[in-house]
Image (cartoon, rainbow, N blue to C red; front, side):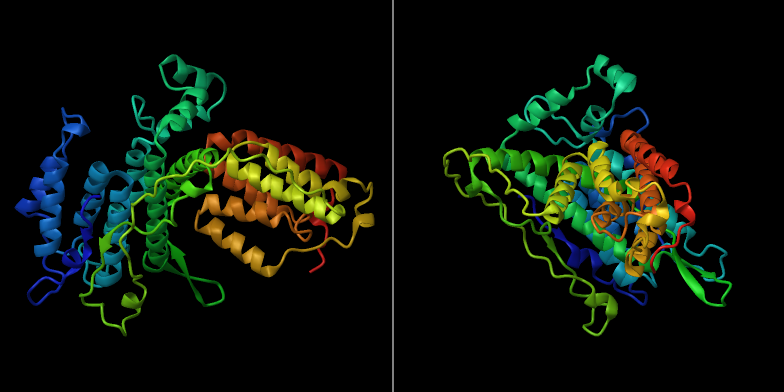
Length: 452
């Protein structure tokens, strides 16, 4: 296991009057890092990432609490240590923003029309460029070293997929075979590391939603904080990587028996900061810093029990139990492959069945209404552009009898699918098609009053 990232040293205040150091954007050190990162005429594998990490760490520790230096550290750690490096890098970013927001470089100019623009331009690299690096990291081992980029091709259909296959990209069967041949221990390492990435990003995202905001005046005279920074691309990339390796590891564990299941994943090994301008126990920023323990990588020798026998689900005792099982099945299918139309059609066939059974909508009244909490939650996820979360919450809410006639729920589903990309196209088309059927039977549904 690689040595932990020493966050305490990286976040320690710099000696002198200004605990965040000085602005070094035009320094020799900055220029050296830029030159080391330059890819003109080079493939990225030839870049000296050790040098970039060393120089960036030196600058952040000794000269300046600089956001760009931290982002370069994230990049170098990802190139050198894969998903574990990304998780550590995202944790560093979160801690740096948390502890040095008021004095961090580039500094905020309160008189500027867009005071956060410089910091935003640096942080947007994390959402727009880091996903590409993660998509190139291998998820399988052996001769193939297939990555998420290869998996995304297996999810394509039609001529687009055929073109990639003709160029030598793996088929779905080849990708699955490579996963099946990958050692379980390596898959479980990836499972832990990608989960750590997801957890570190969630912490960073929560903080960014409070820091990178713009106050907008409302007609009521109040102000509303509008988030300026989103991580949708990065979140979806990490979620996809985690989903692929988690499913592959679970498949191998199921074949081997339950004794090989790993311990719950912990955060990657880091040394958290204990000093800093906001590190006192009374500081709200310091209070938000979770303690981090060293992740255990030890594996016990697996015992090979008899191969598990298939389990038959219990027969439902009444129609309500049958309906609940259908929604459970839809959730399972959605988790297995969220891009396929079947789970979305299945849920709506059940939820809209009673509406389609009436020729007159008035006969189906009263039409149940969703809770105000659900409305607010979905609206917030949409505003924050958390499309994967929005899709999951909307489809989960559909299992409630109060949501079937609420058309905005299905609009949220379609919007989320469209934002998630072309892979969700068939599913979005199927939801639109079934919604069209419902509105042909009940064209007055959009104007109908719900029972709230």
